[in-house]
Image 1 (cartoon, rainbow, N blue to C red):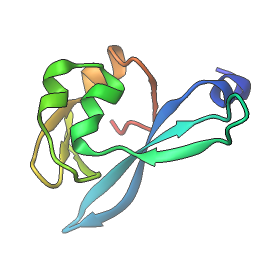
Image 2: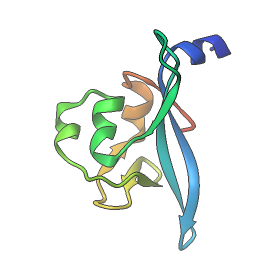
Image 3: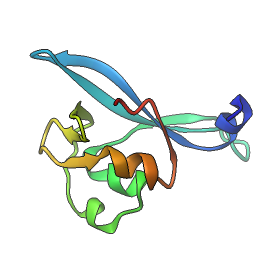
Image 4: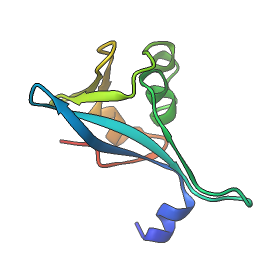
Length: 104
């Protein structure tokens, strides 16, 4: 993907923001490029919004909480607040939006 593609399409970016008791904590930010005279902007993704933003999943939008931090587990990201799990396989393969920086 060229940098021009990144500049024209929204995407989610997963980045490490710290740790607790040796467990890394991640936040997910949605980057929205400048369009139609509006400047580019970013927005932190809450647990309750991740399913809808990434997968468009009706079931995922029904759960979750307002926390914005996630623990990295071998097969999923889980919310530091309510513990809701988000499959990394689903996020990689079935995403409506590109997801960058998803940890292994």
